[in-house]
Length: 308
Image (cartoon, rainbow, N blue to C red; front, side, top):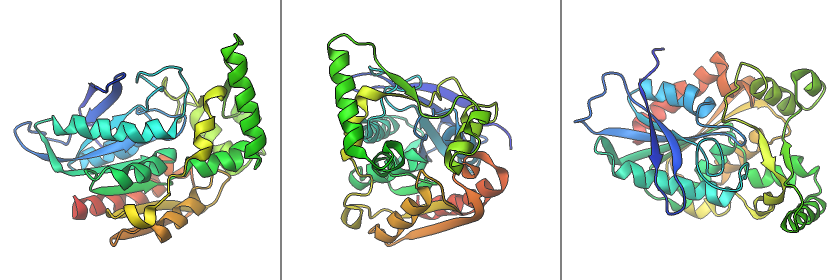
């Protein structure tokens, strides 16, 4: 697959710039109008990883203008304090990216879709509920971040975890040093024997397979609290009416993508919706492994062709 041309842009917002890469179709002609797809990266990831360099690249090759962006507070985007994973802000970022696309002369404003991987899949669904300029949604092994926090990321004790977060934030206000935690073990060897999602995440993010400068997998402890009260799937029965495709692997892990994918597929109000189960593959297989990625793209590319 020939790598498409890439342009780095700054998406203006009222508070800081969002960094994004635009990938162009082969034989791109700026005098024409193209459908556009927004690509959203996983939690702790960045625009240069799976959403951009795997799915974004393939969709650009298929004829779409693809814009992969770094979440606020992360990667090359603005926002302080760094390493903040704020689901409310991440959803708001989508609307600013849509605003930007409307100012680009070669983008057809009536044909904007979104694709997200892992947490980006959950955020894509959440954004589409209220951002009606998004016309079609693809979730690749999407995770509802609120579920993840209340379950695996808090050892199923969210109240005790929130008490600890509150104590850390109070300490920082009074002068203590900020606590930044890595969400994964430091090496593949350290991750051996852990849940499949933790083990495979470490293999992806901590080796040459998936490492990128902006993909830190770090989290600022004192700014985690808001996510515990957030639910990507709230009101999907009423508000998520756009065409939807959900891709999951059938090897479930602690991060919950298999369960979350089945749930949102069942609950979404979309009259056009598809569920794709990559049999024999896991959450992180769908990040970059050729066979499951092909299973996903063989359905996602025709889905966007039919709905954008």
